[in-house]
Length: 217
Picture 1 (spheres, rainbow, N blue to C red):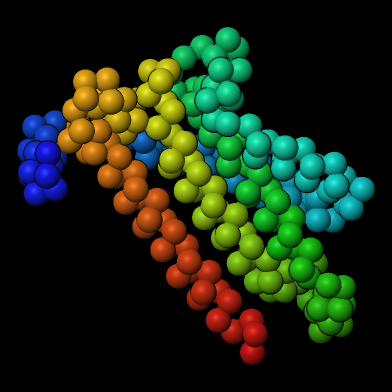
Picture 2 (tube, rainbow, N blue to C red; picture 1 turned 90 degrees about the vertical axis):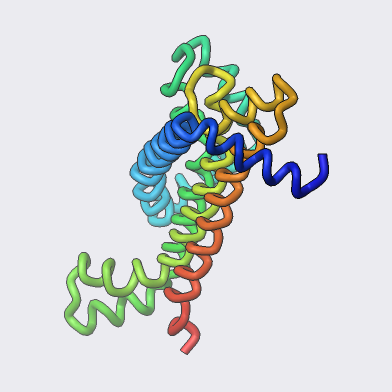
């Protein structure tokens, strides 16, 4: 099938499965958003705490770096006997997938704040909470956003694994397309994922550039 015919057939397939595609996109975003939210709630405070306590940071950093080496399918295989199938093990696997980037970048970001800026802030009469919001967070923010950017792309891509255990999402269209050798059906599952990943990458890069615009001045 040549490119124009493939494009035409893909558009027809998308229109034919419009309701299914809409539901798959919503499920994919729901799974991804839930996993990212929980990972951020866990990873950012833990990363901040590790930046404060050097004795704990080395061990925690090594442990979360090790998690990066575990493939998503291997995580699912481990979780299925414990949590069963469906959305729950997928969300847990995606949380584990997202945590290293969020935690390690949070830790690195807050470590960039040296003692001198904090002492200066205290000397100017800022309280601990004010110094945190006005000095530490602005310095660490590019690192926090970088961690979220990487985690978002990983989770959006990794959420396709939900299809293998009945969790739904765009991965279902990809798997069905592969099983039936229906390339247009595969594409209407794969293209939205690629589009979301690209939009996240571009959006976060623009936001990071904005936050670092005045830091070198």
